[in-house]
Picture 1 (cartoon, rainbow, N blue to C red):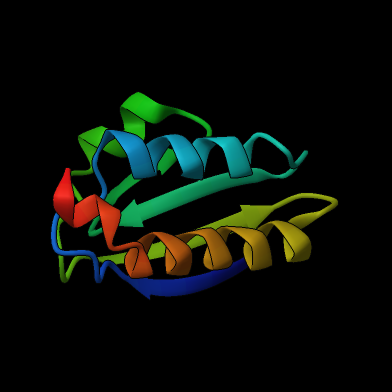
Picture 2 (picture 1 turned 45 degrees about the vertical axis):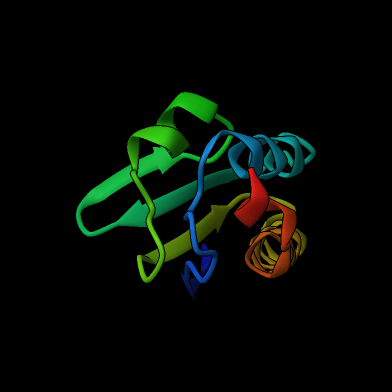
Amino acid sequence: MVSNTFVVKNKYGIHARPARLIVETAVQFKSDIFLVKNNDEINAKSIMGILMLEAHKGTELVIKCDGEDEVMALQQMTEVLEKISEMKEWEEA
């Protein structure tokens, strides 16, 4: 198992559109991928689970990947979360 910590930087946090990008990335991997906020751990392949985390700006998330492609999964999940944090159009929505 590998993990990484990420802080949500986007002004509006993780809402439906960024959650979709997270799920689209996660389902590409065979590994189990989880996002953890405090004691809540959800499957990153579930859009409803991601939305239920209520990850607002400043929220610390732990990305956990476990499986045969866990290293690549962690790298890609970290990259998509960074990309979401830098996208300006989320602020206009």
